[in-house]
Image 1: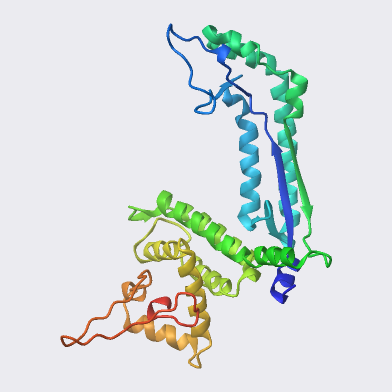
Image 2: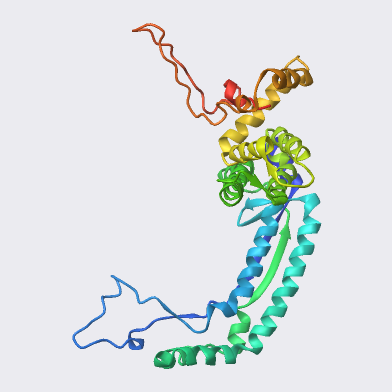
Length: 343
């Protein structure tokens, strides 16, 4: 096993959430339908009849909400892995405590649902009197429904058995080392949602925008061991958060910075290139404070972000017939353009 995979496995636990929710549906049968004279159903290899609901779906909303809450809690600090969530070891106790609380809430909701199950079915029949007979003949017993409602979770560590065939070891190691790609993708999904819901078309926003920025920051920070390019991005977000006013509306240049940062996080490739670019700048012999001071006195804010979201570089010949070739290496983190440097 590679050194990188070993480090990652030493830093995470795998949490699998198992939430089973009764579907309250049954397959619709031919005898459930009343066809007009001369009408006929298509053959089964062409189309199926779908399903029928046995009660109001709203009756099951509490279980679906709790399941989604458990997933959100795991994704807030972890990332999807092997059908579960890779969680930093130090964050596991807090996640487990919240899953325990959800388990208790699920159990309470189950007790209430089963107590009112018969009444819920009767209400559904009353609401659909013409089709009550196809509901009643398909209704499940309370005992059966009880077995279809459960919530649990499992916490395990992951390792590579020595006896595992070589090809299986390579496959699992590949999944381990690609965890950072999944993390950057999930951050991009959150950032895009943040932009759509909170930033687009706004000249000023409230301090509520700080919460999604901090959540993305905390997730990146907790999983920074997955990729060396994460830490500089976290530092960039920390610097931005430290300059957001403590009260009042957020507008002007600081809102533009929030928007630009969210746009950056919404593109996994640019986020990685930006982190690598900051590491390159930090390795230069010139003091970073000097660089920042020089930039702040010689450039406007809009110029700092000029080109950061350009995907291609175009060059034109000064004289007719003369063309300067530009070669880019998409997968080479060391081959960075000026647009990769931010702040």
